[in-house]
Image 1 (cartoon, rainbow, N blue to C red):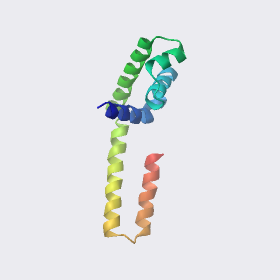
Image 2: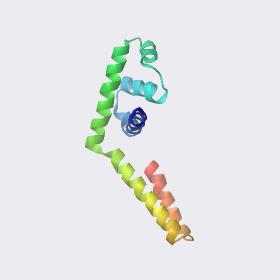
Image 3: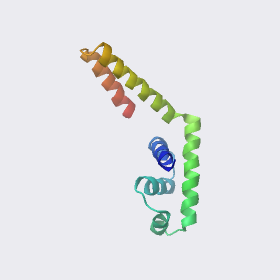
Length: 113
């Protein structure tokens, strides 16, 4: 459960991190990406552990709110799944068609940009 939450926060951070304040961005980065403890973050920013915890909790909610309204991550997942299905279909049905494979590769790159 904790790993799923960490993965979800990291994914949402990838999509919406630029919408966060510098402090929110830093706290999430340190906590989820760099695996700092609340105490280490508190010491780095000269605040209490509770302040760090509250900020991280609020920021997680903000990220979830962005996703519930904008659905960028959901659409990304859907497109990624469709591209995977397309790749499998091409490999099975048109294994020698380099044009199709190149087009799918291009789609993958545009999805990741």
